[in-house]
Image (cartoon, rainbow, N blue to C red; front, top):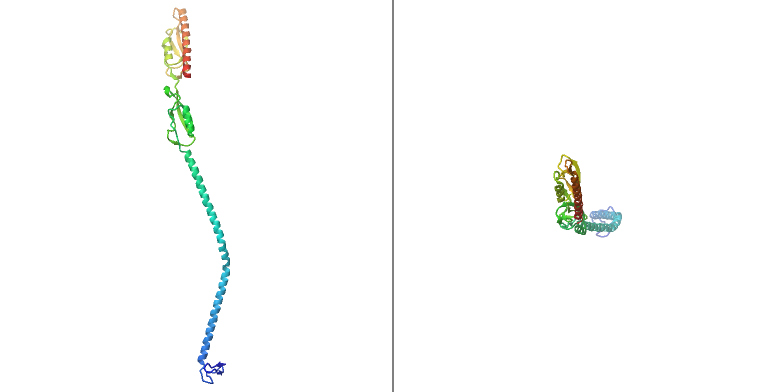
Length: 279
């Protein structure tokens, strides 16, 4: 049934004109068709929006676990900060320890060596002990009385730098007690003993009977001439006793007297040398 929009009269569905006023129904049909189409389009649009909303809801439901992860992130970030702080504190501690060890190493290896030349050995050792340095003595013979017992040289120069407990070698002067043996062969006994006494050499006299050498002359010496010996060592000189001399008895007596005198001289010279060594 079609209602006429002009006179409101009811007409059949297939009527093209209103039976009352003659209104043409084709335009009205077109409008109804257009209205139907528009309503269908609107329904489609509504359906699409509904499906979109549904997909959004689904997506939000899927994203829900991600929100849990975001909630876990603050916990992990706090752990990372704590770990980073630990490493920073550890680095600072190691740096402090390295600085202390470096300073200690610098102090141990930056000790100034004192100059002890001219001091006695006892005084020098006290000075080196105070500076935390070790030492050892090296003796060198000298004839200069002022250098005896005195440090005349040190292995490390005074003022130089060295490490703790470094060994400093101290060269200390000691009395040179070596003498050079003179050649007394061919001298008379008196000349030979005088020469030996001048050189601070102890001696012993022996006699040997011979007819070839001049009487009372030194024909042998136990240590060769030119050799260096200690002044405590004794040299033996052999004196000729000529058998061709007619006054053997007188010579024996004089020789015995000379031997006694010479032995006395040897004893006195030995005593003097012992006193010198003690001094």
